[in-house]
Length: 353
Image (tube, rainbow, N blue to C red; front, top):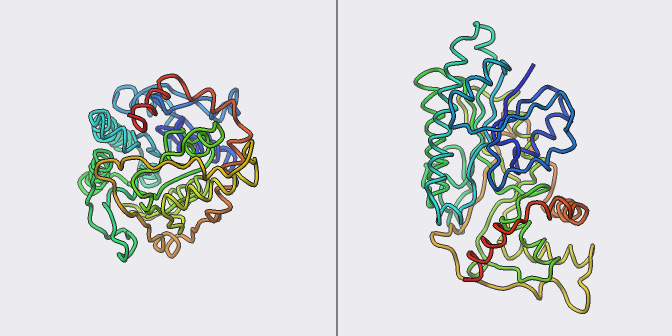
């Protein structure tokens, strides 16, 4: 038995591959384009492991994907492949349309052609699981109910618009062609192997380096935080037991303003690795100009996946953030290998100019 994962060298995908092998031992074919955020160092513990087959390529290359499907005959496809950073989508939206929309289209078409050639039992068992985001729902007011699976789509950034488009394609391929799909919409993930342009790893690494901790606007943008290993367990659950054609929101029940998240990181670092000299890591906090179209609040109502499939997160934010910080403290070599000169140039452009 084999599953095919796209984007399996990225943050969530890489964690999923490691978790899948550890939990099930089932063979996994891992397709990744290895853009700036794809990192094979994340998967170095699987080198030489026959259960992990890495294929360097683009989900937009349909012939390449079709060849992999013919060769490996997976029972499921799990699509993590996506450009995912809102800031980068503002500066360069074309890559987001190409990967998130056109890439998903090509992956769906390859999957459909493969699925249609299966025998009846294999067709019935096959699944295409599309991993998406809560950002497709837009922004919530302070007193609005959290996003449920019935919220209408109101994306506000090039990134979220491209993911919304991909979600619609997945839905349409099910209703038009009968492709057995599942979709998950998750809240903000954090944890090990996170590329350090996102808030939590950026703050951890800047704090340790004695650099400013940049906070957009007033820091009161609220997000629901989900520990990445909890997300991995949710995807396994949906793949195994989810109802075909359904959408499942996956959240951590951890709504927190960005500033409170940064304060928690600083306080945890104060305890685990006190700053040289006097003072707290909080002293490094710096407020910068807010980004265009910054959504004020996201929150996930994850009751459906708990009610229907029995899944709920294990980690609180406090337990998850301590595990995350400890991982970064103990894996500085991984960090050094991903923070290239191009990444440093990006930080300078985004937060200093």
